[in-house]
Length: 252
Image: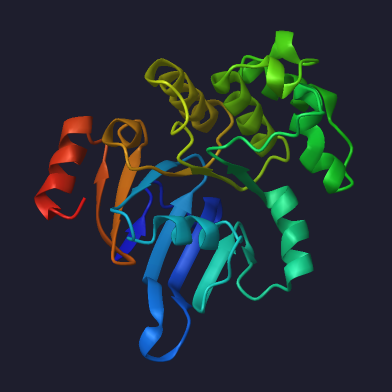
């Protein structure tokens, strides 16, 4: 199944997967986690990936983001095929072109909010553009907290720092792994509002893995994954429509 985002301008593609297969091991004990994934996502799209446990969601996210290498097929970020890059070159590429938001935040406790946000630039040897940094920090609502350290922040504030850090390099795409999983419902809604705002105001492409229909409903499009393959998609679906779709398959 080939899934294409709503906007089909080929010049605006942020992420493209072509016939991606990911296999672990070999012989009779081999596990095929992804089975011929085809996907095109355009800039400014907000996509949720859903699937039951063992469906390949995490493998998909890691492979699409360049954290893992496909067994066969190709993965493109912007205009670059990252599938066959050597590890050191790929790591450098990810620092600039890929943002990642982890459920566990992964902030450095000794650094301030501003230092955590600008860390990817430091690692990439790039200077900080003050105007862009100020815009990002204001957009995520952290302007008054720049000099605080993670221990002085709430869970929602820490996740906002993680989102700002993912955006600071102006990446082609931001990948979010259960970004609201460690948050209460009210804070989770605020984070989802922020992600949706980033797609509108910054034309940012966001790919989010979640198991929660209410979270997935905030995305423009929901793509369903089962047994390592895409099995359907919904555009503008409600929480109930997504939950009904999941229940109908009976494997969630």
